[in-house]
Amino acid sequence: MDFKEAVHTSELPQLLRDGLQALMFSEYSMTAALYPSITTEESSDNEREYLIEQAMFGTLPTVGEGDPYPELATPGLYPERVVANTKKGAIFAVTEEMIKFDKLGYIKDQVMDFGRVAKETTEDLVATVYTTAGNYTLNSTTNDNDIGANTAATRFSAQGLELAFSTLATGKDRRSGRYLNIVPDTLIYGPRLEFAVRQLLDSPILSLGGVGTQTGGGTVLHGQGVNNPFRSLIPNRYMWPKLGAYEWIMLQGTKAVKLFTVEPFQLLIQDVRSVENEGYFIYDKLRYRARVWNGAGMWNQRFAYYSSDTVGPEIR
Figure: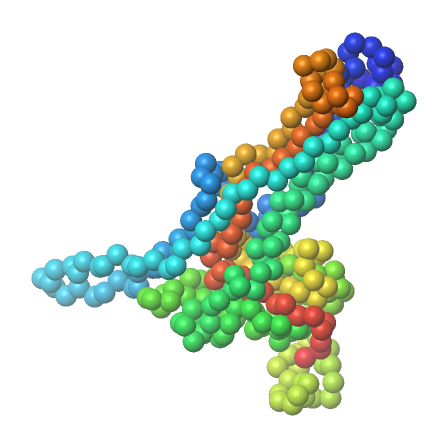
């Protein structure tokens, strides 16, 4: 449908509704977002969702001949986390002047940007969960893994990757000590790590940086060999501008963060040019309202390692 030919026809409100609605939904769908690849999404009909991580059973005990099978006590629960589902939205107004003075190109640009903003809103919601240091509280001292804390200002390097990988790989249930068999497969990183990531994870060989000792002394842990063992370590890699310049996150799949959707992206249109439309009667405006209604929270932090580094990569 051609907007310009219909500017002064009685069909204009219908054309605006159908055409601009299609533009906004199309732009929303085409806007690239990382959150579908790093979250588990579920529908929700609650004002608040409670994420409860249940403790696990250990290995099965041995049962002797003629002995009864022991009845295992139900494992206790870890502290719950609350996720609030909130509405996010705004109104875009189309004035009579925009219509009569042939500003439909401007209208379309704004409506398309509205669709992009709606997608970015959910992206920001998920990014906040991933980059909140308070969501990472595990440590080897609390029997959550065999290595140490699952967050630090770890500089990006071969040794940094090894630290994060082994922290996740040794993740286990705190009470039973049962390992979770975590295999990290995703690396998310800030924009200034793009080339360091490519160098380390795409190079067929490793080269020794320095003269035989790492910064601060000690033995070089990586660099002696010819083949690069990090090349096939992480299959899924994403540069995410939502992270700080040198921040990075290692995780497994979609198991760390959960996204709850109360209602998918919604667009409401007030397109009637009559006295019943108060906005049009007083202000000569037709209004469009877009909103998303959702919430996100850390579901199981054992599947993610967060580096809040602000210094930059190093060769170790």
